Amino acid sequence: MKKKVVAILCCVTMVAASLMGCGSTAATTAPATEPAKDETVKAETAKEEAATEEKGSDYKIALITMDSIDQHWVTLNEGAQKEAEELGVTVTFMAPNTKDDAQQIECVNNAVSGGYNAIMVAANGPDAISSALEEAESAGVKIVYVDSPANVKAEATFSTDNKAAGKTAGDEMKKALEAAGVTSGDIGIINVNAATDSCVMREEGFRSAFEGSDFNLLETQYGEGDAAKSQSIAENYITQGVVGIFGCNEGSTTGAGNAIKASGKTELIGVGFDKSDAIMNLIDDGYLLCTMAQNPDVMGSEGVKACVDALDGKDLGGAVTDTGVSVLTK
Image (tube, rainbow, N blue to C red; front, side, top):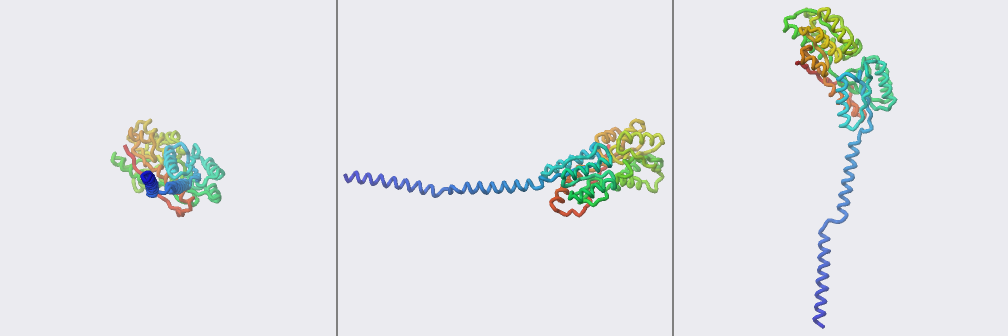
């Protein structure tokens, strides 16, 4: 009997020891509430990151350029859209199909009535669109200029130093003419119109390069940036016996190059502004000497950044930024 009691006591002792051992093991593991706490922290962090990413996502920005056809404006829009995606904002390209003051003003009014927070604009001219922009500003819309400003104060401007770039174009033509042994003669200029500030500045710069020389710069002809109209103007210049032709924008340059190509007079020096596939082909084929290539993608990208900064309350002080130009040759 005594042996049975001892055996039972031994068994009870072993079970107790076993239970104590399990309790000890449980005590050394992390409390069951710790993983839940970690998940809570992770959830809060994710929420904060999402809130940061969502900042500015409700901003609507209208991009209104002179037209929606020229490759220059298409590239500017591409730069704007890429930056918009990075910042999580909406940019709507709502430019008219052709250069027209009334249509551009209508685009501005549509942006205001559509509840857009900011407008990026390349003005056809400094005056025509100004009243519409003033009304937009009064409605609380932020204004940022890309390429060409109007006569209304803006948050910021991103454009080429057009006068300096125009002089560079003139210097390039003058050097090429002199290298060919031509030290005098008539030179034709094809511009968009007399109101587009950026192109007017380019012409002024171009003319300044020939001051004091024996070259005669003819009266400017306007083709409204249309390649076909500009080609007709260039053909008339060629009939008059010019030694060179300068195009102040993409359409003007394309028209000039096409006219030189059609005439077969490859000794004529054609210099232009802006970059497009058509212009680069004319340069590669020897019908144009060079073109002044701007950086419209940079204008678009920086313009969007400026809109978001202004909408976030940052004072940009109306700063004007030169986005640069390069001389593209064969």
